[in-house]
Length: 143
Image 1 (tube, rainbow, N blue to C red):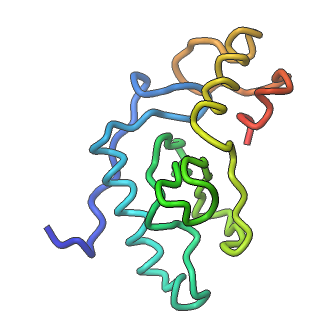
Image 2 (tube, helix red, strand yellow):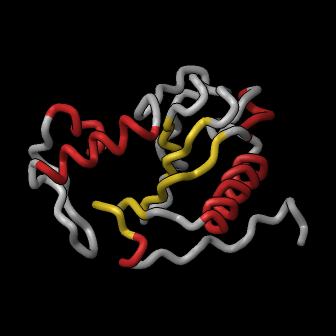
């Protein structure tokens, strides 16, 4: 397999839906998404144009949205403290020089999800769930 050609994006299903549009990828799917994001930015010439890319080599997807957004853990501290979670969206064009973590770590994100479940704001359901009226500690989930 040519490492410069991104593999096909993984299929998502109701079985992988965590809440809203967010899905839990398998390790294999996350690896495919990681390489595809790097290849997409390389093909677009982002790093050459800006001196840095939006998607960092040390990021690894832990959640994927139906529209292609990725929630990635920073494994190397390339954009924030090691373990920080960042949202990568090909359409958002976030400032690569001022990236801000979505959550400081996976524990805080899961804590926010549990609080939203306990308050009945996220219900175990298949398909899309609108995240409205979230408790304060869960509001970042409605990114």
